[in-house]
Each structure stands twice: as structure tokens, then as C-alpha cells.
Image (cartoon, rainbow, N blue to C red; front, top):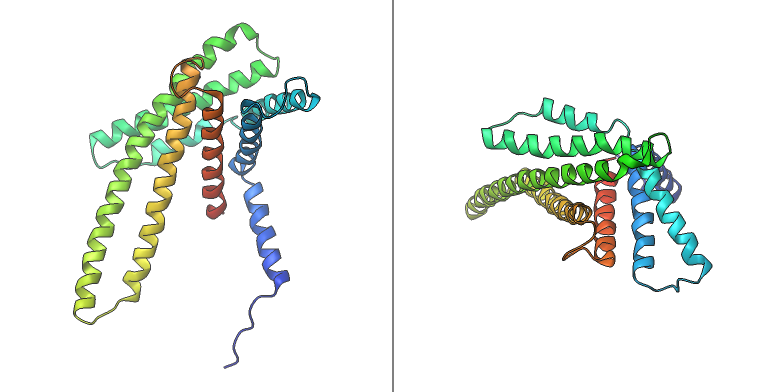
Length: 247
């Protein structure tokens, strides 16, 4: 049988652009690209790399502010995904149920309130409600991350246990001279899943720090503009990676 020729560079490029099209068709895909651009800009501004008197500095401030408002538009109706995630989940214990309610409930309330904050920024609702709504939104987001991180640590520990059991099974098979390619593939998938779960936990911690800073109005430890900008960029890069590989 004739061997199949490797894909040409043109085919690889088409595959990449098809992947890119699928990524950009997702609401989260575009939102995270905006998040990267916003927090990269905030890092430049908070690092004092540019003098305040420079016209570029003012343009970057305007850009960062406008991108922040634009991102809020992508949250319209997004609370529905948390509602459905909670409805469609199956829970093995009452503790898991409570954590899921905290995680999905907090995030859902956050996205729901963010719609009204966007309407305030857009000028449709009076600005006098802005401060109160932003505070409620920040609290809901922070509480949601507490639940999300707790759930993800449970998932991570389960993956570690599954990995240990599979490794023990593989070691026994090797000692008997019976290699198993299927188990090797399972191990690779478990290790990839464990890595993604680690990244997801790091992302939640980064976003949680930013929510906590919003609650404290930027005061206190771990609330410096440069630290929070770096946390925002880290979160955006992790989320972009997760969305890219899921396309």
C-alpha cells in the first residue's frame, strides 16, 4: 500500500486558519483577546515606563478604559451558562452540591449584575447606581471563585488518585512483561487533564485577587496596580490557551 504523503504547508496553514476561525467565533475567544490587550496595556501604564505627559500615555489610558467597557458587552446573557451548568450537574455529596451552588451561583450573579453595569457605562442607566452595583458584583465574583477553587481542588485530587492507581497497574503489567499501549494513552490523557486543572486553579486565584482588590477599592496587600495587571494578564493567557485547545 502506498504511504500517505505528509500534509503540505498550505494545508497546515488552512488548518490553522480554520482553527482560528472557530476560536474567534466563540464569545469567550474574542473576550479573552480583549482581556490580553487590556491588561498588557495596564502593565505598561502601571509600570511607569511612559511619562504622564506623553500623548501616547493618554491614548493608552483611553484604550484600556474603552476595552474594559467593550468586554462587559460580551457578558450579556452569560449568566445563563452558570444556571445551566448548575441544573445539568450531578453531585455525589451534599458538600459538592453546596460548593457548586457557591461557585455557579456567585459567578452567575456576577455576570447578571455586570449587564447593568455595562448599561450604566453605556449611559442608559443613571451613574448613581454604579458604585453599589460594582461592589455587589465584586463580592459575588469573589464568593464564586471560592467555590470554584474548592471544586477544582477536589477534581485535582481525584485526578491524582486516578493517576496513582493507573501507574500502579502499569508497573504490575511491566513487571510481568505485559506492556499496554492503551494504559499509556490513558496516562497521557490524565497528565494533560491534571495540567489543565492546575492552570485553571491558578487562573481562579489570579481572578480572585482582582475581585478582592475591587472589594477593598484597591487598598491593602496584593492590590498594587502592577501586581493586579500581571494577574489579569496571566488569567487571560491561561483562558486563551484553554479556549484554543478546546476548539
